Image (tube, rainbow, N blue to C red; front, top):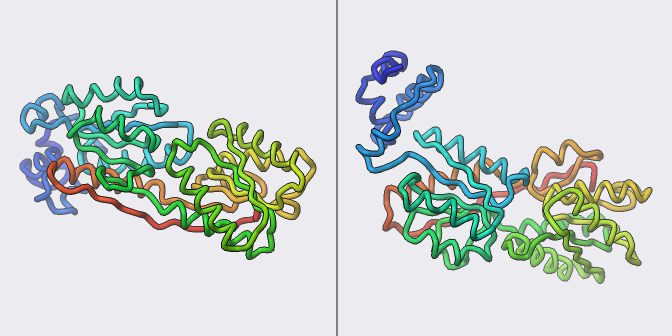
Length: 326
């Protein structure tokens, strides 16, 4: 399939198709959509090497994910890919595991000009090391961010969201609200714990207990909940910092012969499909995960086009979704 045939399919000029392939901002939105649809339907594959030589860009984005098994991360990546393709880009996915050596391997793609920029979802504690490795290359951080705003980022207000969870539980008459957290090297974990503790204090609750899961998995959530159930008094509500941990906590509660939410209410975080798959369905904080990914791409393309521009920081809205578990 040639560029001329793409132009005929889309009903536009060859020059318009060329501008779309080169990510020009002079193309009307309707024309861009018709060209992209024609490309998709015809499985057209542009000559990336020729385009890179012509534009000094690869039209590729490196996406480094700390935990691809995390449903939230997977949804963010879907949003990144959608927006990247809409702008004529493709993504290369690297599962870094927040490991610096692993990150170094992926970041060689920057020095080799194989990618034009990078989107990361690594732990906050790794940002300084990543900054040294990335240097001046265009970079956007998802969900984790530095307060100084040195790196463009997109996420939500984790403190406010966590406070909302405890406030809802306290308003429902819960007196002993426990927290299942994860790895404090992640800023979101620290901020959600901060919000939890602030709301416990603000609601005058005497009970405050935090159990740390060994990893971000259902089995680790189950083990953390079992530790909470072994304590006296046991909690009458549990807030987990991810839906995955909450699902594991629900298994432990059920296996202990207790009822959800009558004996123990459970609230998760992220708003993934998992929240609707468990029984009873999980009350959770919904993050706009795909939109976070889309906005990250927009920020990165801004940085690619304006390398000397100031870092941008976007805080997205979140929702408390009430379901049967609380």
